[in-house]
Structures are given as C-alpha cells and as structure tokens.
Image 1: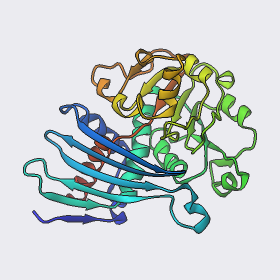
Image 2: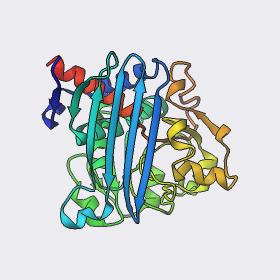
Image 3: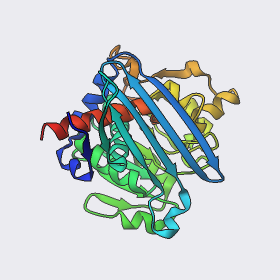
Length: 303
C-alpha cells in the first residue's frame, strides 16, 4: 500500500467521541513499549517520543517547544509524525503534526472527563487561552453539549480574544474556580495557579500544561483533596512536575495515583461518588499519539 501523506484537511473526517473510543480500545491491546528523550536549552525543549504497540503499529514523533515563538508570530510547538506498519515496519503515513497533537491532547482529556466528570457538568473553566484551550472547547462540547465556558488568562486580552457565543472571559480566577464543574488548565506555568482551598466537592480538574519537571499548575492542597488519575504512569510519575515534585517532597506517593488508562477496562478509572473531587493529569505519551494517528489513518483511508 502506498505511503499516505495526511494533512490538516483530514480534520473534517474526525469525531471526538469515536476518537476516545479508539483510545480506550488501544489500551486493551498489549501494553505499549515507549521511549522518550528530552533535551533543553533554557526555556526551549526538544521532545522525541516513540511507541510500539503490538497489533497496532509503530510511531515516532519529534516536537520542538519554543515558548518565545509567539513574539514572532510563529507557533510555539512544531514537529513531525511518522507512522509505521506493525506487520513489516514499512512507512505507512506521514501525518500532520499539529493535527495529531490537537486530537491526541484534547482527546486524552476528553476521555478522562467522560469517565471522571459528573455527567451533569455544565460550567467549564479554561485556565489559559492558547491553542489547547480552543481545542478543549470543541472536545468538551461533544460530551457536554449544554456547557458554558469561562476563560481566564494571565493576559486578559488573551481570554477576551476567545469570547464567542457560550464563551466568556473572566478576571477573578478564584471565583471562577469555585463556580466551575470542570476546571481545565493549559498553561506553561512554573508556579501553581489553581489553589486547593478554592475547590468544592464534585469538581473535576483536567491538568494539561506542566509538561516539564519544573512546572506546576495546581498546589499541593489540590492534590491532597483530589483523587488523582493519570493517563499514563510511565510518562508522568518520573517526568512531569505536577506528579514528580510532590512525590519527591513527600506530599504524595505513587500509590496515591488511583488509576491510569490501562485500568479503564477494569473500571478503576472512574468517579465513585458525586462529591468526589477528581484530578486527571494529561501527560501524553507516544503511545497516545500512535493510537490517535492510527485512528486518523483509518478515517483517511475510509473516506
């Protein structure tokens, strides 16, 4: 079969709910072999991720994360995705990096919200006003069609730029957190922004930013009050500040993580009471990119 070159036009073929089902199905296959490398130059990051899932395929994804690019009007995250056939290792597809990243990142968090957020959630707070926050509006609306969104950003102009029907900018973060059913953080903060003292029973926190060991988005009190879930223990516990830092300081232990996506089938990745505060750390991982890219390839070939 010929090599597929899949660009952003494939987005019209994709469905958020079907994607989450594909992610869940991917975790019923043999556990992924994954390998990550991180290189740093000041605030800049080179992240290379590779995954092999027996029965699904092989993926290599390289990403550069340059936070200062916004000053030049250039995307802060760039890269390439290559997908290889499981049967013989031949190149199946080169898939648009931004398409895979958008649907992997938002689909990961949507899968958590579908399992952990209260089904009657209506008020959703987005902390951060970048591309990920915009993707999360699309994703959340597929599962919570009646949701109303509020956006808080360090720069009020960023939040105001996102205003649209059903989306309102706010400047009082504490009040917005208290009113939200779902709180989604998508920032590059090195210091906690959301405080555990602001939380109330029944909320769901979806933490997407803080992808480096020196980053945090919520404080220790939030971790103490919440039931903690991660998409992948392998890509969060020893690599991401939101989990690594509090474990190192004795605030929590690895045993405090209730479940990851490999526990979906057992039913452990789930809310157990209406009053429970759930917290899901979206750490990503090449295996999730692989599941997402395989879904995109299938949709493209079936068009």
